[in-house]
Structures are given as C-alpha cells and as structure tokens.
Length: 545
Image (cartoon, rainbow, N blue to C red; front, side, top):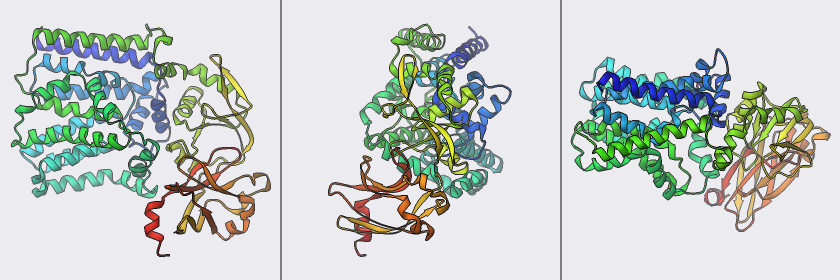
C-alpha cells in the first residue's frame, strides 16, 4: 500500500467513525454547557477560555444538533493530526498505528470540548517554536505569538507548555525576538485579560482555589494508573525511547520538558486534589514529535496495535448506534442516554414557572436549554461549584419570577415527577427571588480566640429589596461542611442595610478550621455568595486587633 493510499484509508476511517459518534452519541452535559457559551459569545467565560464557544457558534449557526455542535471541534482534531503527521520523523504506518491506538484521543475526537482546539493550537505552537529556535525573525515571532494566543484562548493548560519551554531553554530570554513574541501575545490576549480583570479574575480563582475546596479528595495513584489506560501504547513506546534522549539538543529538551512538566504538574496536583485523566492529552503531540525516525514494531506488536484500534473503533460505534444494551453500561454512561429530549420534556411538562432553575447542576441546565430552547439557569448552594451561570445571573437576576426549581438527588420535597419510573423532586415557587449581585464585602474582621466579629458591606442588596414576604432571607455563617453556626433574619437588618453596613459577631466551634458568611433564602441551602475564612491565617493577621 503506497503512502497516498495509506493516508486516504486512515483519514477516511477516522472521519467516518468520528461522524457516526458525533451524530448518534448523546450530547454530554459539558458539551451543552459550551453550547450555552456560544449563545452568549464573549472573550472569556467563568471556567474556560472562549475558543470552543467560537467553534460551536460557527458550526451550529445554520441549525442545531449534536452533530453541528461537534463539527468544528471534530475537524480541529483531524486537522491537527494532518499537520502533526508532517512534523514527526516516524513512518506513516508507525504514526497511524500510534495515533489510532490512543484511547483518550479516539474518544475525545468527536466531542465538543476545549481539548479539541487545544490540540490544534499545540501543533501550531510546536511547529512555529521549532522555527523560532532554529532561526528567529520578526515573521516567525509574530506567527509564534499567534499560536500562543490560540493556546490560551483554547485551554489554560497551554500555559504549562509555555512555562516548560522557558524552563528547558532559558536562553530564549536573551533574544530580542522573544520580546517581540511576548508583546504580540499580550496584545492578542488583551481582550481576555481585560475581561478577567473586570470580572475580578473568576477563572484564576476557580482553578487555583475554589476547585480544591470542592475536590479535596486526592487521586494520585488513580491518576497515574489512568495515564496508562488513556494514553495507551504511546506512553510505553515513549518510555522505551527515553534513554536515547539527547538533552544537549535544545529542541529535544523542550519537547521532553513539556511532556514531563505537564504530567508532573497534574501528578503533584493529584497528591492534594483531583486531577482528571484527560488533562494530559496534549502531551501526545511532543511525544510523537520526539520519537526517532527508525522506530519500528515487530509483527506481533503491529497486530496487537491493529487489534486495539479495531476494538476502539467498534466500541465507539457500539456506544453510538448503540449495539450494547444500555442496562449493561456503567451507571455514568447510562446517565448520558437518559439526559435527552424526553427527559427535558418531562421537566417542561411539570414546570409552571416563568423560569426553570437547576440546583448544583450546570450540565443539566444546559441540556434542558438545548432540548427545549428555553433559558433555564443553574443555581449553586454551598455544596455546588460555581459556573458561568453565576456571572449570567449577576447580569440578568431573577426577581419576583415564578420559578420551578429542580433540586439535586436526595433533596427532600413534597412534589415529585416521574421519569423512567423514578421519582424526582421539584419545587414550584410562585414568587422567587435570587440576589446574585448581593456580595458580602468584608470591611473589618477581628478574630479573638473563638470569637469572629467585624462588619460587612452588602453590595447589590438594598432596603427596597427587603419586603415582609421575603423576610425569610438570612445572613448566615457556616462551616465548610455546611453546618450553620449562626443566622440572622434579614428583616431585622433594615437599618444596617440602609447604612450599607452590617455588624456581626459569632462564636466559632473549637474544631472549626474555616468559616464562611453568605446569604440563605427560603428553605434552600446557603448560596455561595460569601467569602471563606481560613481561621489559622486570620488568627495571625488579626490577633493584634
């Protein structure tokens, strides 16, 4: 089989399977969430950069379906493989065998997730970085800055590639063209940076701090084990060739620093928090580029790789068609099939409010909007994480609307609806208020032993909002586990609100390590509108007061 035929067979098989999965596999909650991004185009969002939203907006502008949502993301992966093939030293056969045997790449190649444009941006980054290292000039510097901007606009994990490059080759800092690239990159990223500044850096706060507060379970062993399963044979091939690395060669050193740096950072993170297996997918690019030209496989290895590739293709098709009975699938996969148009219709039928609000479930809110063309929101209590809906609610608050609230599983209510024979809770509020702009600004905090006291300013919550029938809104203090330490009815705080200042004082349990102050409404759990205080930090800071 000649080179052209080999290329044609590979890309035809890859695109065919990708299209089958893109058409028939149910839209995931995260994909629907990014589709929600695309309905309100911006230069940044709460938890991700905007590239995936831009791609979805382009591909789904004509008509809306799971396939059109995924189309440009899918093509981004295909195009990145096409460009990568021209950068590697491997033979075509070795390249195709390794690429198609990467389980994670196979699965994500048809999904509308930020990793898809990240793959393409990373290939462009390494392409122009090699030219910059070999012979820097103005043109290459500008093209490299464009690739860097595409990296950051695709996914923040691209920062690890840039940082690893500088650690591997600090001599880049001596080149005047480096600063041309640096300034150009800043200019291209300036809209994104301005958005972050104007919104008080929500993405940085979430990824560096809030995610750890929510995902305190370390998964170091599980994360390392998952890399073998998700990256597949290429990881073993890379480790086999590791001894032959020429660390004196700048280009080779950069490639391996990017691999080790990316996996290393997420491994360290997994020691204290949760690291997702797919976060390292970008390392397959420098792995493939670094492999030697004379890499070959035995007949047994070739047959084993081909068998694995065939199994992955069949698995993807069987999930999409599907050939496997749904009740035999893992519970998480079963849930993907359940969150469909019938599920959305069952909620729409019981919803009597002007708006549907999902508690602690931004994916469900997004899926509901996708299937019904409505404008549901996700609202998070103390236990749920923030999302882009928090920012949208700040811009478009719910005020005196009738709302159907869909709580999380296990929430106790008197009202239920049936779906697939299961009872699911809902609450109809005829006059519902959310105060998303009510932020507690701490003007003064004093910790003296077990006593926390001070004053706070309530932004966005005025005395006009406080009516007798809404007097069940409370200012509360609670620990990390959600246990309320003290609450005070807002009805008693008219004077304090008018004065734009609220004094508070509360006893801290002896075992408490942190405390938050926020807002609680009706019979709902506390909303994440407050600020977390780590007591050990403030014992030192405020003890002199």
